[in-house]
Length: 321
Image (cartoon, rainbow, N blue to C red):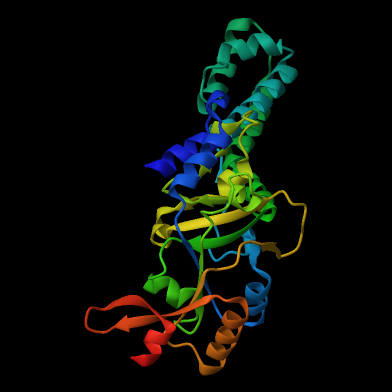
């Protein structure tokens, strides 16, 4: 599937595989029309008038795990292990590098026993109180490992989510769930966009990407030291399979240095405005006025009660029926 190839070109673990230009060319061959569900309010009207979209900060999205990351806890275990070994060597006046060499391949749980065995074979004088103190120190570190690690992930995710600003589109204008959730239960609208005519060098085209759905959060451990990978973008485009039905694309702005809840981003003019089947007369008039001024085609959702499915009709045709 082309999206997997696209993903591997912009987020490869091997720097030699990274090729953003090739990814843009690939995307240009498959770029679909995209749809943005919305309520009808003052902000929506202004955005249509000015060809803007609202990019919201990721920590304010309805998905609490949006743009979040994780790390392999073994990385944290390695840090705890290093602390244990240093404290051990300091307490019993042993050479750190020699002890590290002896236990470097052991798990965190096995390290404590191995260190105590080291004392027995090294001939170092030690008291029981020293051993008790060491045991208490190690146990305290082990007991706190999960809490410390979870706190570390919480702080890391706060940083990531506050760096990401995104606006969302879908490949599907006929989703009953999205008309209900994002378009005010069919009282809102869905904007149709065509980005396929943009040059691949255009910033809008560079910033819009398909979302990848997976059961696994982004594991930053796999990307340690890989500076060619935009990790905030990687996190923003990785979503749970629970959201797969949305068939989502995103414009992502990361590291823009803002602390605001969102920011406007100018895009192309929508090629059509699809009104919900239950849009109010007042909101309908607003949409028809804007569309006339900007020469935007107006369509409307029709609910087929016999087949239990949605369809899209040109507004004039809908009105006649």
